[in-house]
Length: 217
Image (cartoon, rainbow, N blue to C red; front, side):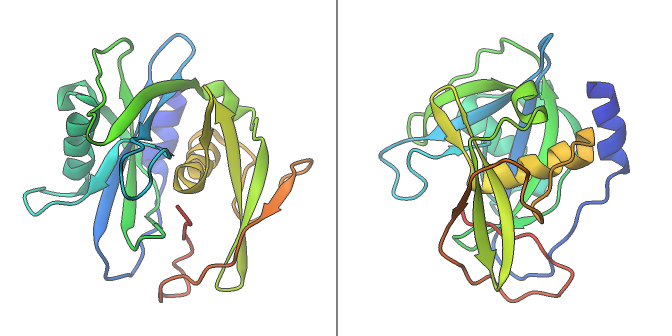
């Protein structure tokens, strides 16, 4: 399964956004257990923004970063003590725009199981894993309908390990599932049988017509 994922992501051509705005990057770590899992973090409750939210490790690009992959790896090492050498890069997903005005680039990588990872208490409360099968089976609790500049996006919301996975992370997961595993999920259409929860419409940043990925997180 993971070998097929590698092939599909290497052939994938992620979308680029023609937006002049601050950049960030995240790592989507797949733990190579017998039954693979995805690794998530939970932002610390004392933070001013994103407190308590589930996210992938990552953050804003710093001047010393060689590129955005360097950003994702540096932030992962700082946030969860993940050594760069333990990450096997599989590919990149499309850029997305956060509510706070960051252009975020996701990278997908494999990491070994049972690494001595520890959350940085200044930023995180927890690190946890969720079986990849939960997302492959699209076991969403409901779907958030977010309208950006008049266009609806159908963003899944998942519950696992007592946490809620939604927003920016869920949007990245949709592309990972559809492009990496061929799952029939999409942000552009409502899934059958899922409860829809409509959220307040949002105005997206000015962009070219081909740049379609926004997010509310």
